[in-house]
Length: 310
Figure 1: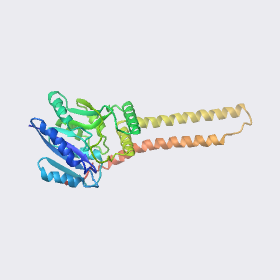
Figure 2: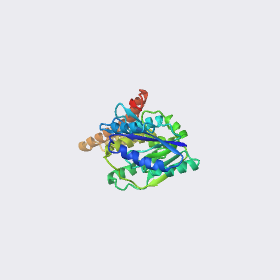
Figure 3: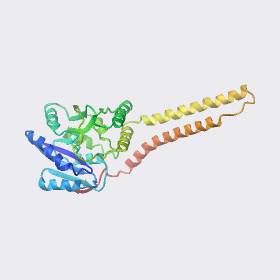
């Protein structure tokens, strides 16, 4: 029988744990010649998420397992921990909020078993029910990153996917501290097929992903998989330098041609100074973002720390 490991990052999801397991088991039970195991990764939750997971572990000790972090390390660390712990020939990564339809696992398994591919992933065909401003910036993110990065990231792609052991091993070889899983899944290669589905609202609870968290996450994704922002900073500096040299030449020529001409336009001059100062700070910020990532990687800190595992 084939074993499927289901990796489930959790952060403040006490309302969803039991419902998630019940829904997934209904799908797994209907699949033939398949056994499953669940790895719930408690990412430093502040509610009773861990207690709910422990209840399931006591009831189904051979099927339900968990790893509890010492604090909140983020979803990327939780995904990595789950992939390390999974023992199945096939590994599924999905969210606990049931926005990733468990019933798709049947189709995923059929595709991956009957075709020479290593991953079946999912993507949303629409963003129905999502705030307009979030949808706009999300679409803009995919346009930007795919135009400046050599790693293609599918618009609307979810972390929800089924992978072979070979692909999981490849992902685990990337031990970088700053992680962007959507980019990593694409970067390692392997043949991937996508299944589309319509956006689904979460079954219960509230999301922990605010607009600003998603914005920071997108910036991390861009800087993790593209060096173009550094090139932009260099070109902006070059253009500013050339513009200033042209301006200096103009002032000198005007002073020679028009004797007695005085310097005027102090307000405009101050605006130019502020503009150039802002450009310099922007460029320094871009460079600093990359240096910060290098600094964190050079410390060689662990991606996560366990408090408990069972």
